[in-house]
Amino acid sequence: MIQLSYLDYIAAERKSFLHRLSPKLKIVGMVLVLLGIVMLRNLPGLLLLYGILLAFFFLSRIPIKIFSLTFYPLIFAILFIFISGFQIHFIFLIFLKVLCGSTGVVLLLATTPYPSIFSVLGRVLPSTFVTALFLTYRSIFILLNILEETQHALYLRGGFQWRHPWRSLTNISNAFGHLIIKGIDASEKMYESMVLRGFKNKIYYRGE
Amino acid sequence: MSHIHLPDGVLPVWLWVSGFIVAILVGTILSRLTKREELTRRLPLLGMMAAVMVLGAAVEIVPIAYHVNLTVISGILLGPSLIFLATFVVNVILALFGHGGITVIGLNTLTLSIEGVLGYFLFRLFWKVLKRLTPATFLATFIALIFSTFAMIGVVSLGASHYEKLIHQEGKGIFEFHLSKDKGDHHEGEKKESEINLRRFIAIVLPLGFIGWILEGVITALICRYIYRLRPDLLHLEKETL
Image (cartoon, rainbow over all chains, first blue to last red; front, top):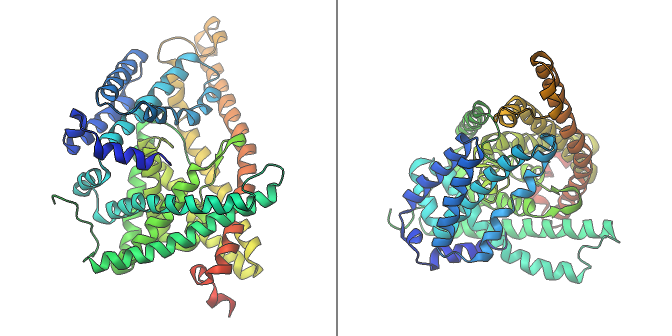
């Protein structure tokens, strides 16, 4: 989550062919990747899809440290090892589906600035939903800043220690409580400034 | 625990498409029932609470592979109709970060919103009965999490036959001893093994979930207590205490 701002920086800063490609086309591409993931049920097909995504990943010169993000969802796929009765073929199939999905998403987020993504989505989805989505995404950055300050305070109060579970739980809960209250204060200020700038129920993006 | 971390292409199409249809229908009805001005005025708050939920989901409690959802506290603060939209938004963003596939967003919204909506009503009920904030919040969270976890297990069970198809697609038996038996036995054994695997899944999820329910119950109760100390107006409890 902390890498979100870096991801956004790369999306806005880099200038590869994929960065220059229209966001609409990239979203259509992502939908095609999803279709592929849903439809393909054999290892060679999924390997080919993953290979194409990897080629795009390296051709678009996205920093290699971002690549590790694509492995994160594998943690959740581990449950399938137990469901499948430890069947290697099934596990590979699931892991490849996970990797294709995550690589596609990271590729989209690292090559497309988020206002451009929301601008395209705003043409297809209801405006209230896209506005809520945009405000949530924006709020994550605000909260990450508050969290950084809170982490220092939390550290000074003992932070999280396995030896003192109750105190650690209280510290974490207070940090979340603090985050919520600060977040609500920030949301009230955000709403005031949005109304001042003429917000009714839809956010207009550049070029609309 | 109630958040389905299934990747794309694992659940049968009819299941995730139904999830989307029901989630969109419920979302449309709820947004029609909410006044437009009220919805617009509370959108930044909704966005902020959704962001809190996303951050909560990013904090992994490593030994039990659990992350807090903070859906109940968000439900208490947002109310039952806005929490539905918030969970929808949260699931879209979580799907982008790999917490469950994009196709599972609808089903995840339904299971998570059970937690938020039920948590809201249970909190109001327990507050009226017990008149004590910490136990009311803990019980509301604990019970809401039980319901949503069982909803998640229900969804995973509905896709069981599809997993079997995925496992068997190469024409090989999944379990080696099936190959040596005749066709009738094969199906019987398959069914039995599938049940066993689902049981195995439930046997993993429920004990871990139980620890998670208690942890999240305690964390939510402590957060609620903290908010009550600093901003009691946010919990809208004044009327009931009078």
